[in-house]
Length: 246
Ligand code: BTN
Image (cartoon, rainbow, N blue to C red):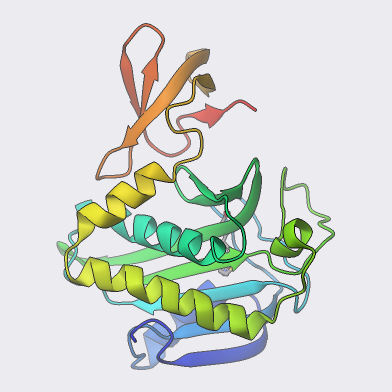
């Protein structure tokens, strides 16, 4: 086991990702180390967002990886591996789970988990990667203005042990990381694409030119979203260039 071979628990932290960054500067940290906490006072989401999580209710972790075998142009495969690993975990509890491009984890139309991956590049390689995951487990009331949060407990009615969830998730992510190490990229990519939220469904999107009807066809190896327009034109987007219209 690589992911989860070393666990570091700190009761309260500003952010597990920030803490992981500090550890990497000062210590030799074994690959697969998981930093986890009960509470983050400054949990970070995608740029410009905060991550809400009630004390002791949810899974808040950061994983330290050294994917030095990957070139920066291939870095999106890490997002794909982490997203599919979270879906592998969630399907043990609930049958439906999808990945809203690029890496939000959804149950139907609600967000159950967010991922913040911070890669440090050195020349043409990835020196280290901090994969932060916030997964809503037992929280039943959300107070921030996040549009559509949901937790495992809200769906199943069951209360879960957070450390048991961390062990199970670590094992599921470890299987995906091993696929990466063995260069089984096609398995990860195919699973990621087939799990995409709204894959092949005609629906409305908004880009810089306005709202249009289209359907998601795929995601490129570099992580760009491919949408077919009704006209037959295929448009390609980077993160933040396109929005889903509910
Ligand atoms: C998102 O905006 O969807 C990404 C959310 C990522 C939240 C997790 S919680 C654990 C780790 N530490 C952080 O500060 N953020 C990530």
